[in-house]
Length: 409
Image 1 (tube, helix red, strand yellow):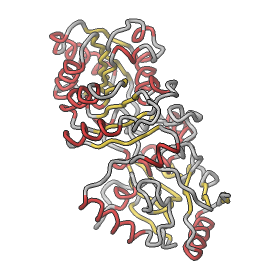
Image 2 (image 1 turned 120 degrees about the vertical axis):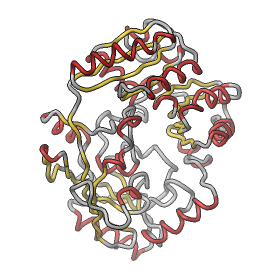
Image 3 (image 1 turned 60 degrees about the horizontal axis):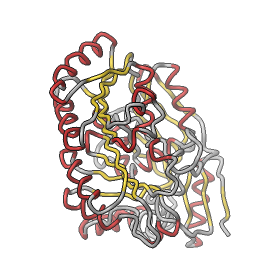
């Protein structure tokens, strides 16, 4: 039986963590719980839910800085930003629909803890690159602050970079500060049709290496476009390669025309204007093509973009699956057919990504599979030793999210 604690402020969080340390009882750290089905399942007696630590603490649009309690829903932050025509530039994925939850219910703390970023990462970087500061409680039961409200404020180690992607295993964040940016005035998308995976990666490489500031590059093979629910894309029934350009209207129009001319060698180029472009990239961001495939697990692969097509081909030869390409080929979403008693394609997937120097994460699967398989990429010996030392420094009794990423860590 798990006891759920919902602290109302940072002081209560500190007391709860100190109690867990004193009792040597591990605690699960969550926001609203939208990503509880992501990572290894944890059997714990205590859960600390941060949803009551909610609200925007300080927002200075003219300074492009926002501070919020860690349990603040993303929908609340996005609504505040939209009033000032601003955005989180790293375009965080919403895992809610993919994991069977409510869209927009995730929290800013969970976003940063998981270092989530969407299609715009190819231009603007990951969540950690926009993470300026945090107030948190370590697994030692100590309240600490790191970073601040300006970009150039670091003397020594930038702990925000360490906390982003730590999945709540090092600290409990109670307040965070992020950098935000102006939202683009216009968005257009160029579409190339009927390209195979290799040609698509080649076209995306040309686009990304051009001077036209492409902010999204994705490839949707023919067996996935029908799941997007968009007539201009899914109606064709063929593979679609999408390239997004954003910014001031006249600049976008000029860049669209110039990039279209450069890509003419790959075939006919069509264009989506702002409204369908936003819908398409939201679908790509949230992997909507796989959201309804509940009989299939979902893997997330990070590989060198130039190797994306080769990695996909290597997996296809071993596993019956669907694959989506984002980040110009650097991010592959893989949905294999789950045969009874199979390893969900793990052996083939990990071999393919290791050959390229990438890594793979099991995003969606049953608790039984997530307990039996490696959810996160097994680290090399040196990285594993470093991770243990970092964990020891922040959480020596392994109180926080024990086993979420790796067994007993």
